[in-house]
Length: 253
Image 1 (cartoon, one colour):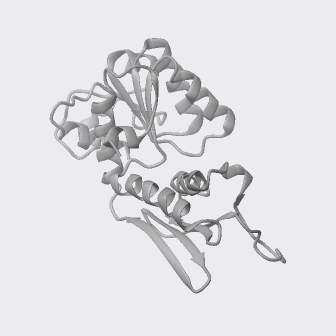
Image 2 (image 1 turned 135 degrees about the vertical axis):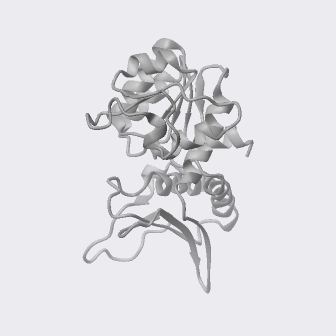
Image 3 (image 1 turned 45 degrees about the vertical axis):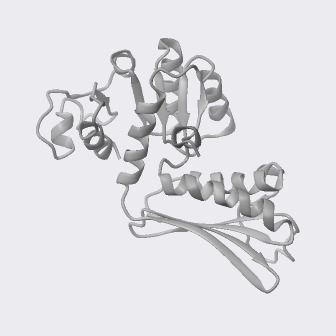
């Protein structure tokens, strides 16, 4: 994803690459352009996040929760904008991002693609219109290396469905089933997680009623859709007042 972000920034009018950091010592000192398969840019990989934030108008972060929290704190301290595509944050880490957004503009989305964000809106509408007689299941599949489950996008879809029903997701979700579970409880939102191969990301939300089933879904075939959305978010958030924004705000959905 880092390499794709580099290429997307370089290829986007109005954007300029200020720098990049990596924890891996083998990457530090390498030219960012060369890493992305481009001509050398004269900008190398560093390990100083403070310097990177100071040198940038907007920082794009697709890393790990602990790193994201650290970058959010630095962005808040410097008053710089941040775009976050990291998933798998726990409640305390989520609260830290929300706190940082009181001092810096932060775009945070579990999925940066236009198609997925359109799907989120459709799921919320469907949940509201179909009502509680339809059972909701969120099915997702990703590549074998993904570390968090359910995916951030699957949880976002669950939140959208719960919003349509005007209930908190954590009061109705069922994240796993094993053994003799008994009949499905009315009003719950279930999740099923699949992992394997090199699947970029498949998500389907099923509304199962008596005699019919409605399915809304999205299949990603190229990770560049996430880089494209992240750079679009970076261009949008520059100069915005402090606050926590989503891709709905960026795309005007």
